[in-house]
Image 1: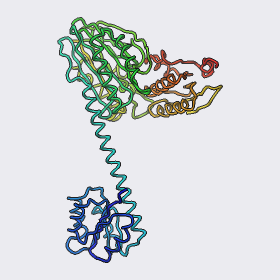
Image 2: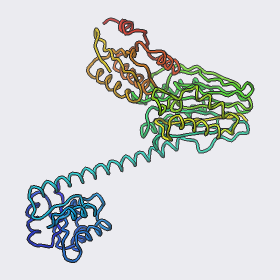
Image 3: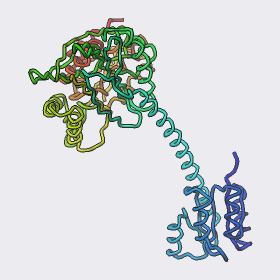
Image 4: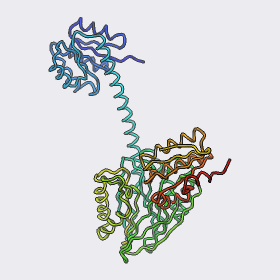
Length: 378
Length: 111
């Protein structure tokens, strides 16, 4: 392994030689006799650690450090001040100026070697962590882009049907997503999906789902058949611990006919305008991708003007309250708030629910992704 | 979480809550059992008052990895909350669920 480079900045030739002798066995030592010299050396040789004398003619150590930090070295590079004065004030001033440590003359060989070694090790660890963070941030960014490509850019335009959505992933790449597709015969397919986990893996599984779903949605007019096929396809490719839940519906806007099936997913709520009552859409089967040959039942209802369908993920109903962790938001509270805001504009209805979720949680931050898709018959 | 072996079957008793915090531990525990060749497992939910979707997820992942190794899993003594959740998510069609650990144990074919 290449030895670390230590830049020694010291105007006294004898002190400089002494430091070189103490360090040259373990490190590549670069010497500078003045502040200006140090700045040039740091530029050219990119040291891993700098020992910097405070008392020097011309630019002193503080001025040199200021220029170095401003123009040459990164903030994390360890700089240890050297000084003849052992008073706490100049030590404090040195540390405040951004040095990581302070050594007083005459140098103790042992103390010098330990301090240099420790600060180099810390710097290495810090560089490693920063490199990993950069990779992780990059991966997260890619996953986030993939994730947003899963969401529809716009909703199919129809004079019979309108869509509103609240989508709040906990991390840039969440495990929830939704899709609304235009199908043949002016039918509309809509899916709300909750993939196990978050992050890169969830975004990739979401992408697999979306590709399979979009191709199947155009050929299969039955949500139950679609989920059966999708389940077997996803089962082939998903790892043991990954799966997803979904609600899939096909709506014929002109007649209001809605055919649906759920897969291990919370049952959507339907508001009936005529009776002002709520129904649930419970038909379906188990989650997708974990077990082969699952069966799904299908349900159908006829929607009328003013009816609304609210599909959501369990991130909504499983929110833990801030007061007691036992306390869950739950479906009862969701139905109450949904009904209270039912005569508002659809966006406002969802906003009201979201405000209540935040109120219950006692925070704007949630622990799981939250998705609510509200479909209104106009 | 408590783990014991009865007549060649591993019984894992889960704690008060089987949620996002406890799920990884359960998954790891079952993975360890499968790796050491123990492939018949009963999950005893008798002490568990609360289970959420993460807990269900851990059970699903565990059953799936056991089935892949020609093993099997039973669930015993779920409380009403767990039973409702299994019904709503249709996991009652996937899991073999018994009222007691004894019934779950005796459901394994004798080898």
